[in-house]
Length: 295
Image: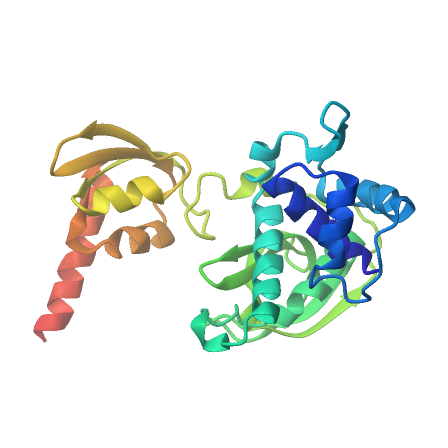
């Protein structure tokens, strides 16, 4: 039995509803994840149940009153972005195995250089460093040693965040600009920078952190205001005022290049109300865009 695959299957099954051991046993027998077609024994279930709890930081409890297993705090579990992403990938994999007409599922291309993910995660887990060549669009290729701390998937691109050991600076590197990637042991010297993955991008849109976060007010006209309610631009987004024609939102976010790109992608359906310097910045960007079309 593939332990990792079973653990994902178990969490996914219990997220849907509580199940007895007999129900889990029958469900596993007919599951496409059961490559070996082996029956689920009670001994294997007990062992892999603990593995699933450790692997995904969840708690599986047995409810004696109803004789079923369930996930504790399942609502918060579904807010875990990494686990949700793993489960979504798992479900899609199962769907692709079950259906015959593959063309009915249309997907975006995978993020470039996704094959680097395993080696970078291995380096993070083992507290090793990476030796790589990095080529930005603005500089010559740079060969360097890099201590990776975490990775981020953003707008169909993978990024690794860590410390450039040659310059002792925190850097964000896009996978597709990396080449000659190898893992090397790290001598364990204290790292002078502290990076908290949960906080590093908390006030950012995208992967740029070169501005201080600030309160920003925007107005979204109908029907774009409805879309922004469904999918906020940033977790800090709150509705301040609403009419039939528009909604005013406030966000606490860094007004970076990435964020301005996101605002411009809303076309004429969203305008910036404040602060004044950002309104002026948007006006200058739009004026330059208009000038390019008038050439």
